[in-house]
Amino acid sequence: MNIENNIFSNESILAWLKFFSSNTIIDLEHVKILDITQKNKNVVPTVEAHKTTLVFTKAGDDDIFYRLWNAGLGDCEVWYNEGNVPIGKIYHKKAADMINRGINASAGMLIVNKKARNTAKIGLSNELFQKGSIHYVGSEIRSIILNKMMIAPQDNICVISGESIAIEAALLASEGNVTAVEYSNADRNTMEDNIEHFCLHNITIVDHVDENTMKDCPIPDVIFMVASASMNQELEYFIRVNPQVRIVIYTLDFTVAAGMKELLEPFGILNPEIIQVSVSTLESNNMFKQQPAPWLITGKVERFLHLV
Image (cartoon, rainbow, N blue to C red; front, side, top):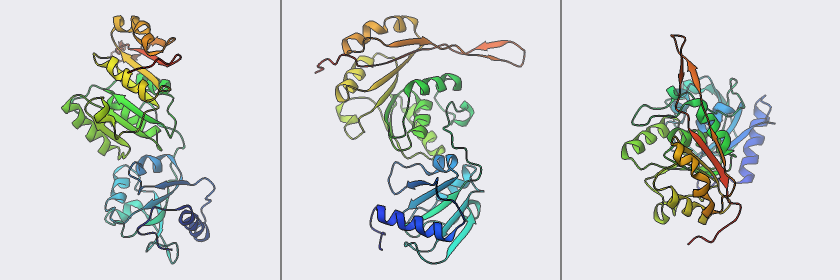
């Protein structure tokens, strides 16, 4: 069975499953299968969240074990063989002992993370993000935003000027894609740093929204945007390409929030939910410090209008 020049087929995946089930004592009932020969697959967050991951790789991935070790996953056990077919002797090492070993053949390997928590990360601490030009929204507020977005693993998402939202959305949409729209060059650079830091492969960065910049991006199922002067043009585009798109809008401006129902009505969004989120934290001096209190507007088209 030669799979060196071929995407992993159902037949080859079953063969690798049988190989590992016959040669290890690991219960494969709850194995997560991840083919990282597909460009939008994220190995680090997947291994973090699953006790057993069957990873299919291609030759030439020289730093996969270093990325695992760098993310604090050095104690994960790796089961593998030599070559590109599921036969022969099986080897067993920790990821930390393999950081200088690349992948020399397209093959499957079993990664066991005994410390995995099979729960989605939501509302990451801002300390985990890369420092740069971006002023991140508070983690508690971000967790509410992500809840309102209702992200499914297969969703395609567009995030406009919401950098930490884009990162967490990419972690949640493990089978989907995120398009991050960043108008500022400095913010785009910080986004690139975060993408590398979190080892994400399902985010594309663009500098604005129009037919040309978005033509190669997946049509989004969910939109998150910070209210801006270009919001009408952005809404017109997204609703035209997907009338069923779900929309979450963020603003700190009371006037914008108060006028949102009137603004959205021409787009067929008739009953948006508008809430304000307020979070206060206790400081070391026993005084409460209030974070900025944004309004969140959520909705979808109820009466489709012909947009041209």
